[in-house]
Length: 132
Image (cartoon, rainbow, N blue to C red; front, side, top):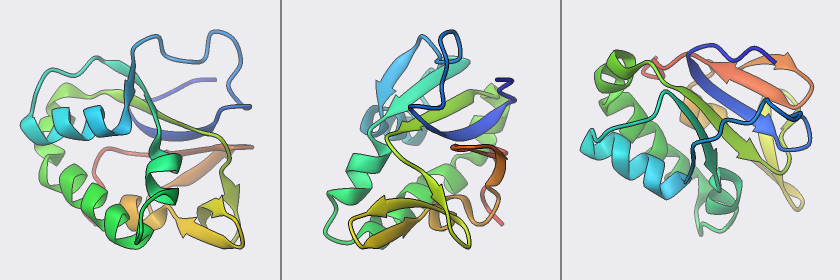
């Protein structure tokens, strides 16, 4: 897999040996570092986005919260140019990329504002600018 600069939502089963970035952190730690404009590694594997959203009382509200952090810190992110893997246990495509949640679906476009494009099975990519 060839990961460009930006965000990559990747199904854990899709990643092969050598594709997973070595620097790992939780989604909460990643968002904290972005919001605080703290040091970020160039390659980051972020875990827990799916469980964070599924565990929320209102996944749409949390998705908006995540989007707001990424949008407000877009200049910081574009200066650092990280490659961010959001490693999830399942990502599907219906009319858009979603995280299945029982009978419901959590729309990833709320976070990425429609910029996620399918790169391959279980792999969606977006540039760092999610403000549009």
